[in-house]
Length: 218
Image 1 (cartoon, rainbow, N blue to C red):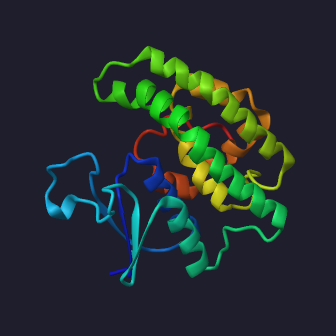
Image 2: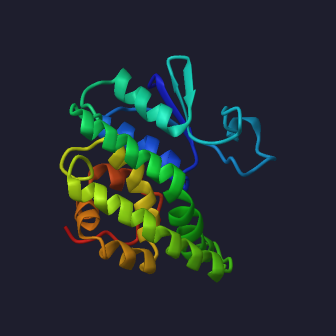
């Protein structure tokens, strides 16, 4: 049994961020599926997270939650291979990408476009077209900001994995599962080039929760 345990929910993009870091680090771990949306779940199916969220990592009795904290901890506790660049400017861009995703990207990319355009229809639920359209509109500014970062080449090159890649990839995978999302992504050459490399990585295949319907050609 591994001394690493990850509590998560497979459809959760943030759970996938943690799983990507673990995969890129080549770490074995025990995975426990919990449903943060089921208030009546039995104790063994509840998250030990104090706010009933996911993911949460336990390592040899040490518990850490919040996805950024989990990723940083794993990269520090298991330093090889490192997912943090050496150059200060690359470190800054890595942190910037993660902040962009959390502050501005998650809601339109995942909660609006993916949830309304992919997840709800797959569950037999009706799409809120107003929410979907609002997500596509808001995603434009996010993609433009990420395109600018990718063009500069400090991170998001697709060649040397960083925590920025692991944080962004699940969001783009969700967004690109919708045809309209793929079309918006295709209008950003640098970001698309990065995605073509990342979408086909072994770590992405390992962590696919069943929604990565369209992998771009490499």
